[in-house]
Amino acid sequence: EAQVTQNPRYLITVTGKKLTVTCSQNMNHEYMSWYRQDPGLGLRQIYYSMNVEVTDKGDVPEGYKVSRKEKRNFPLILESPSPNQTSLYFCASRVTGGNGYTFGSGTRLTVV
Amino acid sequence: QKEVEQDPGPLSVPEGAIVSLNCTYSNSAFQYFMWYRQYSRKGPELLMYTYSSGNKEDGRFTAQVDKSSKYISLFIRDSQPSDSATYLCAIASGGSYIPTFGRGTSLIVHP
Image 1 (cartoon, each protein chain N blue to C red):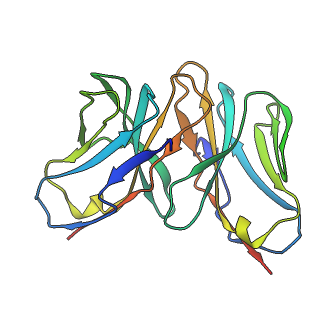
Image 2: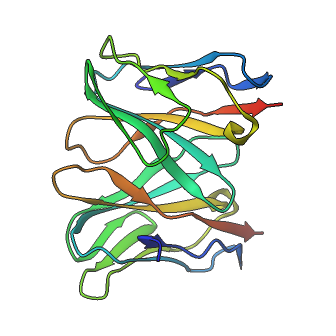
């Protein structure tokens, strides 16, 4: 089944403790992206990657890092999480110039 | 002004009603128009994609784009309780294809 897989689905952590949210897609898509979704603010892009080793900032990149060492994987790294990063996170992928994203099921992160 | 405006609702309709969901946008460079549906505790899923003015139909769903007014709509005919979800419009310019999302409209279809 074609899909984007995120892990974990739910995560509660403490301020300052580094964490990684993994994202993997099995569709051979070049383009991958991370979004956060907050009430009243909608989906906002954090980082995106147009291919292996090519990443760029989205609208809200502060406090996040990404890497794209393999085509299928695009992990999101929070080196020192803070409570304002409590949110619902989505990974998405598509072909370059493609018709739209395939989204993962989301990771609900709570930073206390 | 936000680039893509969408009324958050909620919009509550009886089963069988025709639903109209709308977005306005400000950037005339936008060329690609999408509608996503998001059920509670799930990721958004692509419903409709179009890149031209006019209508595009897929079953009970019709996407309409009016580039001159910078206005897009999604119509749902014969709405069902299973259509209850949040509907997100997304608009992208040519070249980058990076979409800007509306905030989403919550739709409730009651039996």
